[in-house]
Length: 219
Image (cartoon, rainbow, N blue to C red):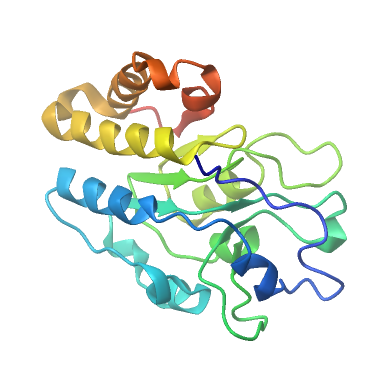
C-alpha cells in the first residue's frame, strides 16, 4: 500500500527551488490514473492529464476555469519547519532541470494565481488541509486557502497522510454516488463513499477513511 506521504523539510533548498531528483525518488502512484478515469466516467466524461501533461508548467497553462470538477491525485508536500525553506505544494511530474517556472512542485502561491471556476476541487493527496507553515497558522491556511482564492467553491482535503488504495475508493465512490443521486449533494455522496470503505474489513481502521473532510460553501 503506497502512502501519498507529505514531503519533509529541506526539499526546496536555499533558493526555494525543488530538487527534481528527490521528487522522482517518491513512490509511484499508478492507481491515480485509474482514479482519474473512474471519476471522469462517473461525471459522464472529462479531460484527463497524466504523466508529461502534469508538468507544473503545463498545469499553469491550462484554462482550469472551464472545469466544474477538478481532481489532483498525487503526493502532497507540506510546508517545511521554517517558512524560508518553502510552502505547501502538490507534486507534479518533475522536469529534467528545475527552474522557478517548473521545479515539479505546484506551490500554494502558484495555486492562488490559477483561475478556477470549480464547484468541487478534490485534493487526493496527504495533508492538504494543513497550515501554511508560518508560526501559529491555522489549519486550511495552506493549500486550501490558495484553492479558494483561485476560485474553488468546495474542496475535499485531508488532515493527515492518506493511503492510496482507500483514497481511490473514496474519491471514485463519492462521484458515483453524486452522479446517481445529485439531489443529495456532495456531503452525502462523500459520507456514503466513506461508509462503504469503513464496511470493508481491509479498511476499517480510521487511518484509511477518516482524514478526508469537505469544506466550502456547504450547498
